[in-house]
Image 1 (tube, one colour):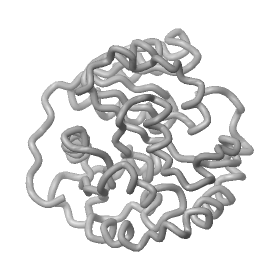
Image 2 (cartoon, helix red, strand yellow):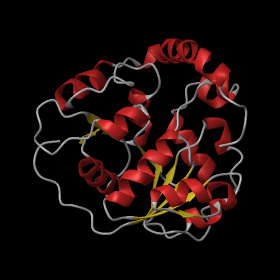
Image 3 (tube, helix red, strand yellow):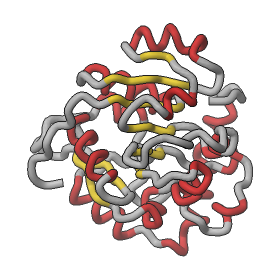
Length: 245
């Protein structure tokens, strides 16, 4: 995104999911002076060591959803169905919710609505009963941790952000602060362009090439994109312990 974005002042952030992306975001945001509450499905006692090392506060999932101005849901797609149905009940409408998730059938099982063509984050939004912003789903945690660069650096990695303003604008400012160029990827229904297997997925592109990749995505090829990404990920999933996030 061209131009200078204003820095977000001290932000209270809840993160639901303490896997690679959740922990990486928590670590980076704490270093930038934000206040982070970190949750997983197994409870805060299981997070005390990790949270202490990061400087985050271990909390319950419900507490993370009510911890401040922004909530990141960064869990496997199947786990969204296990979240409390009233998780965001009473949470103010101006609290921004980010969805970083991706649908991998070999890990998540078959989700008929997604196989039927519904956009992943639109489905997540329905499950949560909240609008969401799609971000951080197309980058590996290692790249997120290591490839941030100052604004204006040639070749700076760009990240797509899909959703509605003004929530999207807040997320784009935070992405810029993390060291990546935010690219407006349209509304949440259009976030299929950054789903697994699409031309922009896990490629660490700069902003001009990311925009080209988003434009090159073909909706009729979503089943093909998904199958290619799922087949590539199967060996990794086979080595992972089958536990809740």
